[in-house]
Image (tube, rainbow, N blue to C red):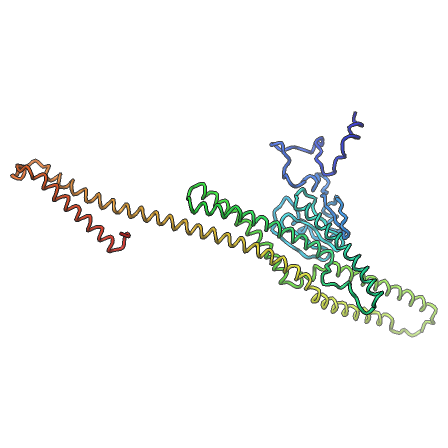
Length: 442
């Protein structure tokens, strides 16, 4: 029965959860922790292994499991740089250029870019999968374009050797690490721009509704919207500042030319090997030559030392010149996405200004209502004072004393008329005073 089950069921992936494993303990809610990120695939308990997606220069991808120290030795990175890629911690967006790798932490995209490969943490996030697919597509398209360009170059050289239609030094050519970095920047900028667009679609109708009807529910929704806006603005501002910092520092940009540094290192190694071969041949020839009894200075070593010093100076000058010339490629790449992320930041800034204007408008409305209530309270207080005059008159005439005025049958009517006229005159006098002092518009 077990054999039949193994034949019928598909193979279990390496990153799947082993429910029979005694070390596995489900959560109280019955769901896996950190849904959306394959945490158990990222870091296995007891082994320290993490699942990485590796994409090479030809667009081929595979899933590998490497521990932390092996990855540090492989990419020549310190532990603090790998800690930036840990999905269990939240770090701001960062782009770091190292000796042999570029550490990228842009929103969901957390990867290590070298001159030969891209290593991403294996995640179930759709943006990570889209990044891998887009990178493979661009690498495959770039490979086809290079083949077509090489064929066109061969044909043009056959027709006319002095005319080079497709040169290898095309301005559109980018090394592998910059292609991977471009896809990461595009993915991060697209993700942030889409979130900004969703926030705009939700914000403007809600703010218009709040201006027409001020209620507790609408105010609470605007408060939540503003908190989301502040958080998103902070993330966009961090990405923008990181790109701007890279553009301002030529040394960091020159440090990110991994392919050029790798080719330069291979060239220097080949030169050293040829120099070692020359020394071995020189030693073999010096064995057959007669040895002078007088000790003479080693001319070969002096020549070798002078050649090495001259070569190192030439290489350093050439590297500086090439860095200043080729740094424009990376600067143009960063500038393009700087414009995109700056546009997203301008959208969020405009939305924040619209929210602030709406708040000011609501405060003005509330102040107007408060002023109207104060005016009504002032008029009501004045009217209460006028009515109190009747109570004073009634209290005076209600005392127990005898006067001839009480015997007149029309006395009560005259008392009411005189008291009413006096109250009206006092009330109109107060209104005129309020208007004269501009306490209320009348």
